[in-house]
Structures are given as C-alpha cells and as structure tokens.
Image (cartoon, rainbow, N blue to C red; front, side, top):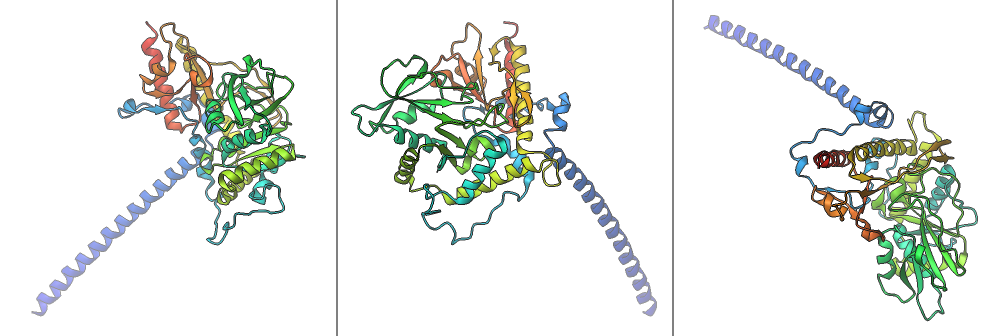
Length: 443
C-alpha cells in the first residue's frame, strides 16, 4: 500500500511539473504576441499622427486603396459638405479638447450681462479674437462679436437686422451666380415681408436698396469674391466660412462691415452648430442679437464652451508647432490633406477628357508665408461631353451623389462635390471616377 502511494505521489508530481512548464511556455508566447501587437499598433498610430508629412512625399502612398467587392455597390454621397475629413487630425489629439461640464453649470440663460451679446460665453469670445489674430484673416478691433447657432442662423439674423423697418416692400437679396444653394431658400423661407430673393447679383438692375451676399472663397466654385452690384443703397454681407488657410491663401485680414464665420468649416466640428459674426455697426449688432433672442433665446452654452476649447487647441497648435505637444499645426495638417486630395482629383480629371475643373492663380499666403494655390472645400465639376446635359444624373447612375448646378443659379452641366468626407469615402470616389473615365474613354 505504501509503495503504491509513493508511486502515485511521483506520478502526480510529474504531472504537476509538466503542467507548470506548459503554462509558462504559453504565457511567454502570449507576452511575445502582445508586445508584437503593441509595436504594430504604435506604428499605426505614429503613421496616422504624421499623415500629412510622409504620406504626401510618396506618390504610391497617396493612391486610393483597392476596391472591395462590397465597395462597388456602395453609394458615395458627396452632396453635403459634412467635414468628417478632420477626424484624422482630432482623433490622435486624445483629451486635449476634452471638457467637463458639471450638472449645475450653464443653467442660466445669461452668460455675460455686461456684454452686448449677453448669451455669449466670455471664453468663446476670447478664443475668437485669438484665432483671428493667429491666422490673420479678419480684423476684430472695433467689432461686436455675435454668436449664433451656426452661420445659417447668423445670416438670417443679418437679413433681419439690415432690412428697412419703414419700407412697404421687402428689400431685395442678391448674390452672384454660382451662389450658395441655400441662399434663396433661407431668404424666402418664412415669407416675412422684410426681404425677398432677387437672384443673380450680376444681372440685378433695380434702382432700389438691396442686400448682396458675398461668399469668399465662394461656395460652390472656390473663387475669391467681391461685391458686384456696387450701387447706392446697397449693403454687403460677407460670408467667410471658407476664409481659412487650408482652403485659400490668406492675403489680408478681412475688414468688412459684417462678416460671418463658422466652426464647422474652420475646424470640422459641424455638429457643434456654432458660428459668429463680426459686426461694425452697434445698431446692426443689437438687431441681430434681438433676432437670435426671439428665435432661440440665445445659443447653447455647452456648444460655446466646447467650441472655445477646440479653437484654443487650434491656436496652440499654430503657436507651438514642432514642439512636444504638437508635431504640426492644425492648418499645416489640413492644408497638406487638401493638397493631396486636389492633386488626386485633378490627375483623374486630366486623364478623363470628360470633366473639367476651375483653375486658380497662386497668391501669397501670409499665414504660410508662401505662394500657394486655392484648394476649395468643394469641387465645381463640369461635364464636357456633348451628350450629357445633366451631370448630377450622369454621376448618380454611377452611384455618386452630388448637387446640381441648377441649385446654384447655373446650368445642370455643373455639379458641386464635397472634398471633406472621410478618407475611405474620398478614395473610393476617386477610384469610381477613374472607372467612369476608363469606361467612356473609347466612346
């Protein structure tokens, strides 16, 4: 009995030792695999963080990825200017733009009762002044800042503020074609009797007061704009949503009576629904504020605080670029990405013989201190084939959704295409466009 027990003891001991050895080997393999994955993950993060530098220096790295079978059936929606492209910059930023808002904060309607715009957060106003000083794209001295729920609300507020109070007829609102497609709809939406849409500024010939909307760079074609009517009784509203260095050279600070800006096209944070106006005339500013008060009783404080933090990080990245916290500025990153996208599109269009794009003359950019071209947020694409009258429908048949030129006051030979979608979508668009070119090149 004792011998059997001793033998059983040795067998049990041997089994335990073998089990421990196998467990140690397995743990070692897991550690090695985990380390390899961490290195691989770190390399991917590093590649994403510095996307604008190494990827643009290598032509092969800029080529679109190969289509998967599933991608061939996907509808590419580039009708809206949804700026999800900027996720590439903000994701690696981690918690730099994170804010914590306690439950008791932002409960009051009022932000700063000493300010003309009493619902504007002081920190947001501070960061607006700072970003314009850093970029050099607008004069803020002697201006009243009015915050709005996006520049769309501010445009309506401006139309309300600038319309005559004692006129029996609505004031005409015009813009040079191609104009932003929402201008006619926004102007006439509520049929207020204060203002009415009167079409293309280039053909406006009425001898009466008017409001001219000047979008510069222009949406949809990207050109720098100035007022075209230039007649007594005219009032200009400058929509400068795209007057930022990733889209166009910053040649001089905008010095207008009324300028509109928005966070959505500056930093990509369209979901915040925050914009601001720089207004010279205090009475106009007061009437704009009254419109917003009647319309929405102010503007979300939470959105303002988050927008202020985003603008602060953008300014920091410009002032500290090349340091430990910011490898490059937000605008350097964004400009490089837009350069890459426009290069890919122009190469595809040049090979086509089917489409054409506007050409822009280089100009000196004070922000980058260099002569640079314009690379708008939208591509104004024309279909040059004689047998294609409707470019929007033509591209829709290839599962590419765009916005027809007829919505912008011109012919349907033109379409507007967003350049601001995610990388995967944009690369798929370039590949799809190349396939259209290939299939029609021998017709």
